[in-house]
Length: 435
Image (cartoon, rainbow, N blue to C red):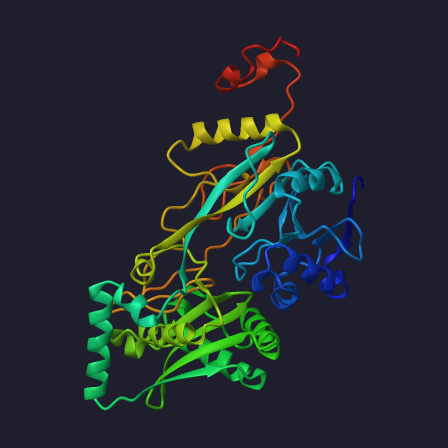
């Protein structure tokens, strides 16, 4: 071990969570990286062999990260599918571009690459181009900024959205269906609300896909523990829309700083033709505008068509890989460009999977997304999970993401440059035969 970084087993997070939160509040200041979110995430989804990295004075660290080994010499930030952001926090004026290479040199063994996954440029600006750094686009995501009155915001929405919801409300009223929004903030009511969420989601397409939340599964336990913790702090909100005595839609949300974050959404498919998720969203958006407590509503899912009905604010999230040797980044980029010239690279060399986590279907949205497709069906964003900075092979600097048919990139040592594959010749045109 070298440098100012120290490493602890992931089980030490509970003992060090006050330090973690202090760094979070000084830096990104997001509830998605607060101990109330990270601790249950570790409890339910970590392998147990991750490291908690801490830089500087243990009583007041400059930076902290949760790191998972993804193969020989390869590390990335801990990234469960349920978390929109990679587990990294640091204090200003320190920068990711300076801290990540330093961390790479301090990691156990001869680390070749460390990946910092799923970062929001509004919370953590990406590093400037530098030797050994590979900045990769992740997804485009949307937000709604709360400014002015809800009536002004609503008047700026498209005619189709406004007319559709007006017609749905009128039809339901004509049919004698009373609409009622409920906001759950009591920790004692969270378990029942998560159970209801799982019941609705399990009745839809996610049950067939095997990704539905169930109260007894690790997803259900995570959301229950996490939301109970946020509700105890006064920062958890579960919005529920009722059609009379029938539950029609649920959004699981947390607040922190000046933001409300929509983590998951689902609806009762029996009412899918009345756009229940959109009716729920309209109701609590109005409430948020009138309260004035938060300034932003964040979705963090891959931007889809239905997002553009509610906002035109879109930004691109990113991953960054840092390589021990700058030339490795150049070789990696060269290989990617030759092997997959028409596809966007992902951490460790994955190519973006067109349509992944972005299909529009009836049912519920996976982590960090929610939606309605308009008058007849509801749209949903599937889970968009960070791919490893490098894959699971034993010799490669990175592998392709899940579902990719491409082989892992391997790092090989050549004693004679003449043995290099022909495609590498332009990189070494000025090199001697044995240099």
